[in-house]
Image (cartoon, rainbow, N blue to C red; front, side, top):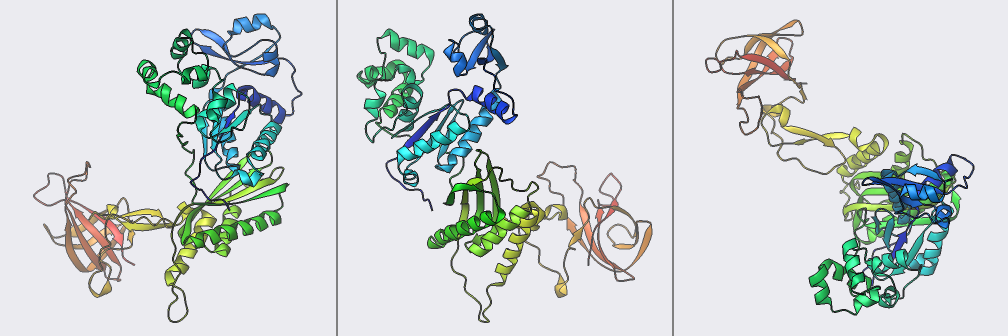
Length: 520
């Protein structure tokens, strides 16, 4: 079980300098193509010039680096492979790697185009310390074909600067200044004109800049530069903003050997639900939104969310809902080469006090209904089980709104009370749009004596009304005529709800009749 604590923070910065060429190499490897030994460069148009934006190790050994024009690169090394830059694909791959990094910490922020920062405060002990965590990340990402550099420090700025412009290192607490000082001023990642001005002033390293008074620097280059410098030196910490909302609680299980059998997955889920529900109960909480994250050995992440209509903290119920959700997947869960880690997260929850049984020993009746809604929603999807909530409108088609039954959101109105003798004032079944009917009635205000609908005539024996509903003038709509509603019953006992649309001698348009609904 992992909880989020307020400690002196530690950050891991990950730098993927060859993400564009690594992506292309991964595609070729997954397609089963034979390795191509020719240098690979990725080009893109920069203004009016076609320039190199990425080069693999083989190309860099021959002197081809990002920023070089394509014409110069071709002149230096004629036998090169050239691929057009796909910025969207690189960004998608970076987000996928950031997803994968959540196996180490839920605090993960991506820094396009080639960086990721993780807040690893309080989680390094799960890997035998910060050194073990860093070694595990290098081994796994290296096995997936990524070239990377990484560093751990007390601020995100220091970790990022060391990973990009220094050597991979674990900076002891409070030692950021000594590790960042020798780095070039390019580690500030300021604008080119700012860096050029600093070099003209003879400031070549971060240490040179740190020795200068801060107020003149801020006046000349702005407070943004001095803030970045202070953060890199460890003077203050500016926490990262995680990509995803942080879960309330996380239970996870790692496997020495990846698992893929359904029995093993079910056993792991049983353990995780017990761990998570124990933690929820200890804090008096119940989960309303859960997420199961399956980490495949090949780096792919599978996320499955599960909603609950009531605060849930019972392991058996939670496991049953998870199994139903997995069974209902359109694409069955594919373990590939196996899962080496499974997480179960409670993303949202509510207070869940102990339930008081009734005097007859039975639990509250609403709990059974809530559990039924949860099971149906897990099986068929939250959008397939719906309910109506009241809205603040007198018009029948606006008086209610449909929403998932699993949601606890309330409407903006109140349900109308029933009529006399418990008879509903309005039918449960409404037509929308209401079909037009032919009516024989006395004018101007009498109810129908008979009406014709679907090629049939209905003779009316009883009628009640009218119930007048004025148009909602504050809405921008073409519905601007008054309605008079009648509850009517024919000679066979069938009951209808009809309305007259418009008023005689007041509306220029002809008065029309419509059938709004049918009473059961």
